[in-house]
Length: 89
Image (cartoon, rainbow, N blue to C red):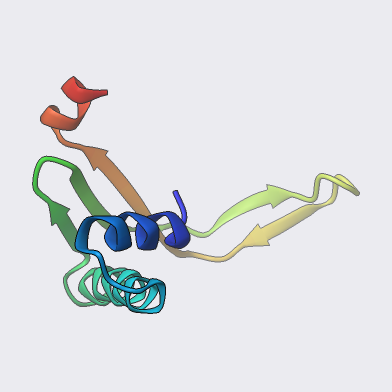
């Protein structure tokens, strides 16, 4: 799914211009990111939950050269589908 797809769905369901639909899709994505930064969690009822998780620093391997490298600690976003979404799919 892309931002353009979300914008086209918004445009067709609300009968607004493409520019306004793209702006609405951008604002929606920015609101989700802002909520993830603030609370570390975002839930869409009947769809699922996005959560921010920390990853530990670890050792990795450069696939091209085979030499060991250090991978820094960071954050990643996980998604868990709701039971109703699982039934629909």
